[in-house]
Image 1 (cartoon, rainbow, N blue to C red):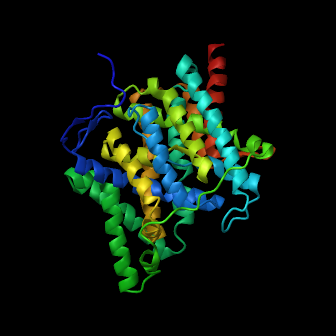
Image 2: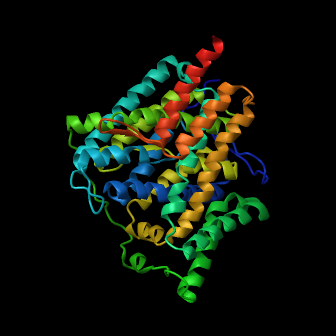
Image 3: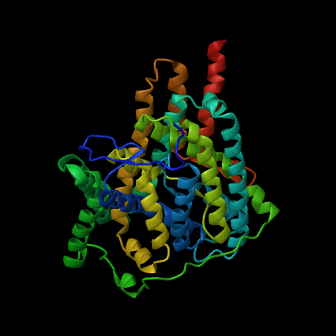
Length: 430
């Protein structure tokens, strides 16, 4: 029997510890709530990246929804992933545009042209993978390498919430309160509440924060004036691309990071679900590449499959692609709502930091799970040294520069793991 283009999800009503597979779904009301949780999980990073590059965050939210739906359609609804703003573009975009760090980016057009060119190359790589398969990639990405890369994606981001999302001791305690709230929801509650641990924990921590600040004056109070003044419906600030050869050559190399990042994410989901998603790898690359081109064409950032949402899947054990279809639609609609953007931005930064600590940690653990599931033998020095070096240079954000192109911690860890494994493998054979 031939496979239908889109999945016919089988409705399930799982227990707390059961896994919901990509081709299954919860009842639609619960699926919709899970979609909201995934939107919240991606929101912090998806708006942070455009802010750092001088892009409009509302456009980024809108295009994350559009990109997720494009990815969903081009993968036939078989790969559970959410597409959000990629941090891999930040350094090269700032270098290509000369952005000063505050306000709107006056040279956003040349950055958008480079992002579109990067998306085009990414799409072509996807067609190549679709034509000849992933074996050539897998040769360079055995479990010890893949697990290290996935772990580094989480560990590399650790400094963001810890160093940048709490400016004083009170806010640090609020971060701790938040991850304790999320943890308590995870281990004490059962059923759907436990599945919504990120969302429920965030709401609980936000309420406590408001009581301590607005009610008792212990810290910076929650300010909802921006929410009250924002319009319910409004158009984002779209922008048109301009093509500059210099900007294109600076930004296109990011495709290497996107390919490896996407591959690592799919490998992680494969390990967690037990489903073979490798046969959709080429379509996943094409979907991500097309979504990046579409995003860049209207003023959005380059997009990538999001580790934050993989962390949520790891915590909830719900991998239904129906959830991501719903999340994409929600983000698309919210992109046209300045009031929603104002509401999310009103969430206290230390609360978002506490949630980020949980989510990034779950990503790191997902990498370790790949090692466990594949029984990686660390008594072999080849595996031990590759993992050790990868974790440290990735976590420490070891950066190498090639002219104006900077390869940050995730990139150096990724290429370092691949190259070191092949080098040591050659040495062990000898």
